[in-house]
Amino acid sequence: MSFPISTHQLTPPDFSIITIHENSEDAQDSLPCAVASLADQCSIKSEQILQHLGEANNLWSKLSKELQLSKWKQRFTLRLVEEKNISFHEAIQKATTRILGAFVGFLQPDEQYLPEGLVAVEKYFQAHPEIDLVFTGGFVLDNVTKKTTPHPAVLPSLEYLWSSQCTIIPSTLFCRSLLLKKDFPFYPRYENRMFDEWLLRLLQSGKKIGLLNIPTTLRPACSTPINHCQGETFPVCPPTMKLFAPWWKFQHARAFKKALRHFPNSTHPMIYQLTNLTERTTASL
Image (cartoon, rainbow, N blue to C red):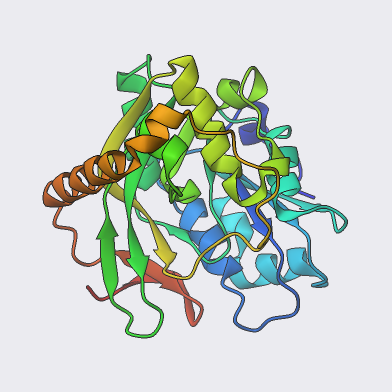
């Protein structure tokens, strides 16, 4: 389901953003905030591929009514796909076969893009044609205290990724769509480590990955994939590499602290609240 074809849809969007929605009839469903945060990205033409896996009825009507989607129709297209018999990770992989944009991002219903975030990402890709994937920074929101903590852009080394339980925030990474369409698809069988295994293949192949240490995303502290299984066993780490695992962890922690020192002093991220979908309000820091 999407808006009727109009002139702006005849040219491909700049970004294809994948969102997997598993919620049912929940009054606290934050999906409208996520959609609004993408739709109001100025100077960016985007599509959101919203794969709905739950039991909520009239999701399209609900979003259209709450957000007045028509006001963004010149630069934003929402594509709603209902598939109820597949897993969270299978839905992400299927969504990648539907992308039309030049760049791909991943935004879950409880996350938001910050103002002008995607403009900065597009400019980075244009300035660095050799880069296939870029990590950005973000903010992590504590839903109890309403305080936000900066999370800088740090690239896990091949050794750290292979030897440690790495934490990758998909909403802070963006890639060229050709990467997914050609040689580097997702493998849903790895489930919670699907993004780890995908990134491992990219690093092993020598793909160039960049860092854009500015905040583009806000996510709640508890935001994790729904599926609790580990799926297929992760590739076995070479014995010599595993031996130095404490060193790789130390190197990664040091890189994180260094990146944090250079993180912009953006102390008041502007986000949407469910009680106010007409303008962004300030989250505390």
